[in-house]
Length: 64
Image 1 (cartoon, rainbow, N blue to C red):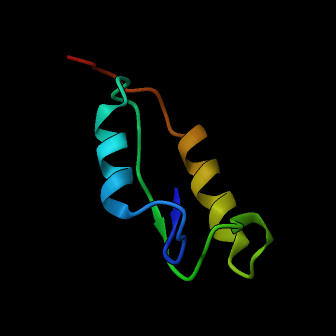
Image 2 (image 1 turned 60 degrees about the horizontal axis):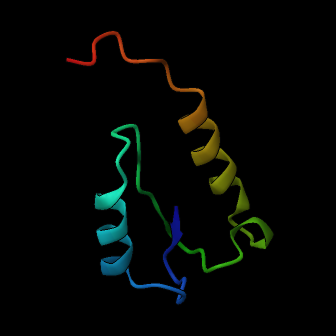
């Protein structure tokens, strides 16, 4: 998860890091209207929604 206005790392750097993560069970989300302190901002419910949806998604039926 990255805020749209987060200046800590560039999107390109984060995508490169994301590609190197070995686990295929991963997601990358950019949160519109959010900077670095995502839990303390007006759009904080978006953060909880993304986290909840990731951790509550069903297991894959087939992993090929």
